[in-house]
Image (cartoon, rainbow, N blue to C red; front, side, top):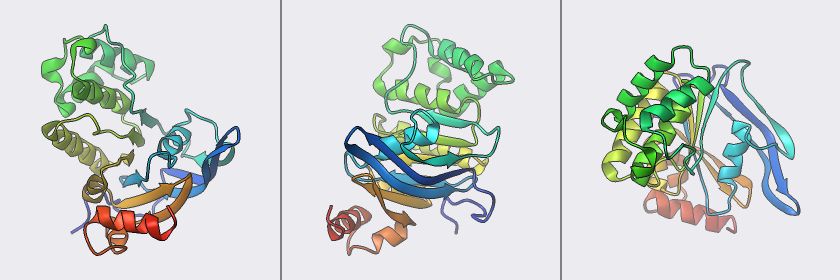
Length: 242
């Protein structure tokens, strides 16, 4: 049985390519010579210790930051959805008003239909008229994710998408993400939950101190230890001096 995050055919034209990406902040090196490609419908997890360069990588892929070296390639005309960890919403507007606003900013062809579909898919329909500032952190994050995916991008970049969610919200989120991947959206997400990466990603990238140390399946990463995947991850980092 195929992994839920596996692309149907990894030999197809990639939806996104990173070529020798590097990023420096003055003397500090945040990312060094990172290369990989992403297939349509693939779910890719990026894991690593704090300060590994995970968020920097996503911001470069999204075009929210300029690389110091290397390049990001995507097919012409394809959208990239970017969902940062910090919610980028208007607290004095309702859920519905936020979605409508961003649908228009994204120039979605049919904003009302897109908003209605996103409310349904994310389970936010009963919160549509609530002001963002009155919602819990988890619900604000759900709105943040809904906004990032309103335009049905070819690639969705999610920075710690489930960090503030309770178990039921997390399960609902991953059902939604899996459905988007099945429809052809490529997903890249960062997480500190190694078990989450194993459950939902077909492939894992391991970053440490800005370097790409590993690219492979969760099963390949697990083979580096005798216990669960988190223990294997720690062992892998230790073997490489991190």
